[in-house]
Length: 162
Length: 270
Image 1 (cartoon, rainbow over the protein chains, first blue to last red):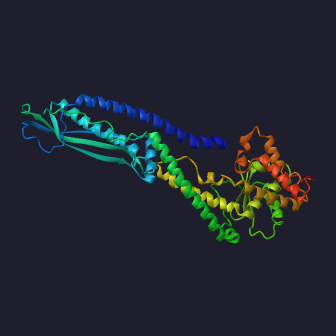
Image 2: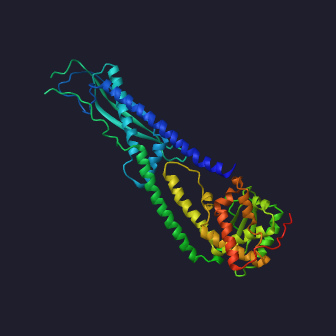
Image 3: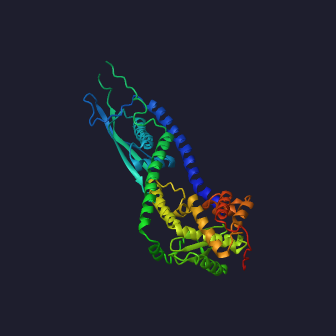
């Protein structure tokens, strides 16, 4: 293979991968955020609380553990930028949308499920994150993250007195 | 007061820096830092070289062949003739600390390289294209010039230094492998001054050997003539300076020294 073609392939292919990853990754991210926003509007008014116990004036009929989880990964472009950031330190800005998406999606899935099953609210909501690592060939990097939202869904006997 | 549930403000947990802007800033900053480190390492290599004599170098690399850079061809009949020619030229530089070895590398690209420990590697592509012994003598003399100035080991040191920096960069950025190797870096080439110095020294050896410098840069002129097929010579042109200017500089130097510009050339045996 001629040297210049070899060189072009060696540099061109990874660059192409990065460009494609950037375009596709950004489009997917935009779409996901749009989806999250519309579903949040949908769920608006459904109480999702971090209180450990029900407010005194709530009369709870039944309660159940509900959870929602999502596994989501960063695109190649953003991962490289994050890698560069890792060299000099500072805010890893390219990871922020990923985590924001994951948190909101997990909470949405949990609360959507709770409402679909007829519950009135979710209390004691907690978030857990775990990293799915060692998926890249050199054992470094992050394959994706799992975000788990869980809480206690409660059904009220009657509307709370105001 | 009635409680009204409101949605939180958007974008609290996400910076509004565009990822491309972030990429630009980071690439510039990281490149600047690594360029600085690379420059420091190169400077360090030059300093270390002051303390490694040519004799020590020759001893350390006595039987070393850079196998990742060249594929040495064992049974090229022309190797012996070339080695004999190299020996004759090297004899014109009596206080050379090296014992020279010559190897032929199987490659279509026309190129010649000097490596630590007195190793000169000539590609079969270069031998194929040479028409007279004088041309090859100048090429070999040029490589000897690199040994005299110790360009070869400086370049290797720089290649290793840059390799270290690049390695750190590649392993640090989450797996973006741009496919550059130490070999690519070593082939980046010497500076124009280094090449000019090597040319002048090579030419003086040719002059002493043949009594004239005629025909010695004929090889480069042919490279120029075949300019419409650049890929075959790309290797040589990449690691050596712009040929037109180079030929001019060589000719000027020969004129200045009063060396005859033409004379009988020695044909090759093959």
